[in-house]
Length: 271
Ligand code: SAM
Image (cartoon, rainbow, N blue to C red; front, side, top):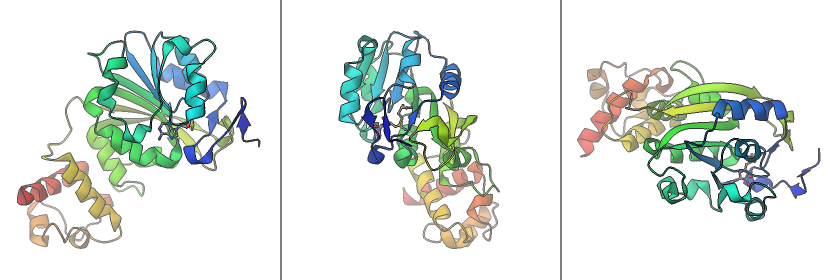
């Protein structure tokens, strides 16, 4: 299939797979259901597959696009230019709290959406989680495998660091599966849309989200090892047992609450 779509040659390094399936686009825009009372922010608008139908419903949309040519195209958009605030920047490096000055309702939270570049989707999720107190919801197209990991429960083979951290910050609701032929050029993998709704208050008490993330990284980096082994640099077997956990268990069988109690012990002894 041609890599050129609407006069633009897709750039692999920017993860450019442009949506063209009207049914899928309709489903996503209906799931987002944007209105003028909200602050909508799109990551990676590209050639406007989601931008244009969203702009049919609202008067102001902030978009973050790294590709200079696409950002320029959006600034000169034939009928939506006036509605768009184009931020030509790397979403991974963007301080989302700095968007306030561009928003139609600076006191209200952000609603973030996008068909994300798959090559940076996991670090981007982690980056966005740190702004979850500013965000009311997110709708993202991701690799299906990443959506499976976001939504996985303990005991599932997909359960890992991303599942624990996503579920610490958000409710995770898979919305729609999307086949490769919905995109130009088609990606090599299946895709899916997910809705993430940051919790009003966290489901478990954690002294430091950073420590939680560090503990998860340690435990899942060696996921076939027992937690006695994978956590040995930060916890003794006796400490694990004291939490009511089996030191010979594997990370993928632990719950978010288990990881929270491990992280709190580690935090306490380090501080
Ligand atoms: N939204 C369009 C669509 O659905 O057809 C394009 C989606 S394409 C998968 C990803 C988009 O994200 C591209 O426009 C790409 O240039 C942009 N992009 C890639 N890396 C980015 C980054 N770090 N920050 C912001 N945008 C990025």
